[in-house]
Image 1 (cartoon, rainbow, N blue to C red):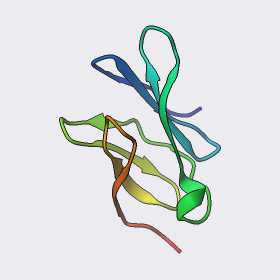
Image 2 (cartoon, one colour; image 1 turned 45 degrees about the vertical axis):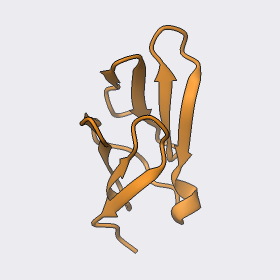
Image 3 (cartoon, one colour; image 1 turned 180 degrees about the vertical axis):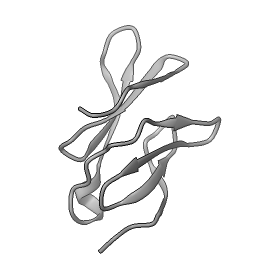
Length: 84
């Protein structure tokens, strides 16, 4: 891992070098949701620390640019700067 996790409420958010992004329960470590970047094409490694707002979790990655997800569900919200 090359990033620091971010904490908001009862969740910890962190991206992995394998291209999966995780939202974990802060107390138990149980997965709330995961997002696998391979569903959008090639796996992307996360090299940016997450920024959390009320509506989004935004993080930078290689090959995928800046990606954002819904904090409660992990559903992909947008992707900017994606390289092909």
